[in-house]
Image (cartoon, rainbow, N blue to C red; front, top):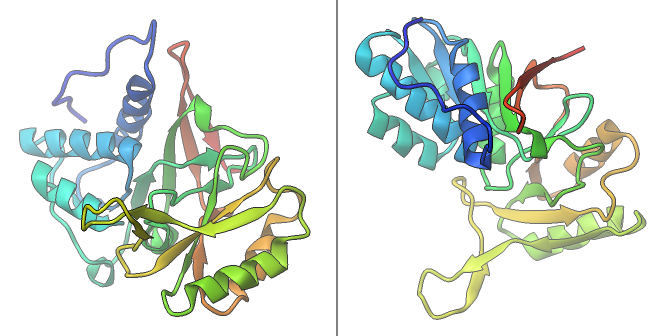
Length: 256
């Protein structure tokens, strides 16, 4: 595959943005002409979109189409010239490329702190391969160590659903949960509930020292709660994780 844009500079004193770009470009090296791609959401995935657009513009890649995981990604892909398909119109998704908020030693992920977890899980779960692009700060000993585990819930009775989640998990040490809020669009300084692209709310679950216990059991417990649509634990989905490190090296971790 040809090169259309200058490669990322050497990482003597790499910034986090440099590292994101390196891992994203390495993943795009796996793309071949004729592929349909799952296009991830977030700051790391944005570098992959820029690289794909550049390669398509120069003809180094041809006949590539993407299935976007969010409205933001859809707008970015259109801006850089990546043709798009709806999920229902994609006969096959050959490869999905996306970032992650956390990656544990078994390549389980926390994703969706930006609010796009449902579409990400649908599209990336539908693909043949799912390559995750991160810098080394995203590697954790346990999921939930560095921030929230997001849970998408229907807006009807979302405070009630929050209460049900608390009832199930309150016995876990250091657990707490809340509905995500953002500054009101009215500009009045008030807070309002965050809305996903699907019109749903997000419950943020926090664990003081990460999640201890069987992740599959915790996933099942969450999905049995009425009002829960999906959660941000992506268990057993990643086929490869590309990790850009501050010392300038890149590690490729593969599913066991």
